[in-house]
Length: 69
Image (cartoon, rainbow, N blue to C red):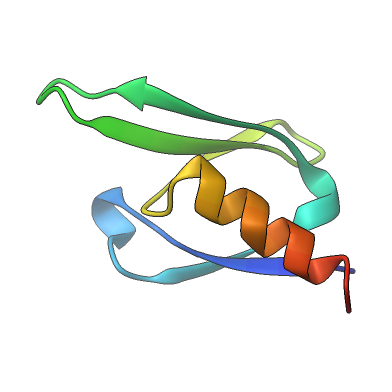
């Protein structure tokens, strides 16, 4: 199983979250009420949505690095 380490936001802000890279089905950004962008990682068997600190490009790079392992 290929895992990527990302950083939670919200009530678990700053805490690491390890996500199975093979279960990620979408990565996207949504505007927040403050006007900034929040990165969402969508996937898993139940279609869960994680909001993380890393941007889409950084996440894609981390996924690509898991493919070399």
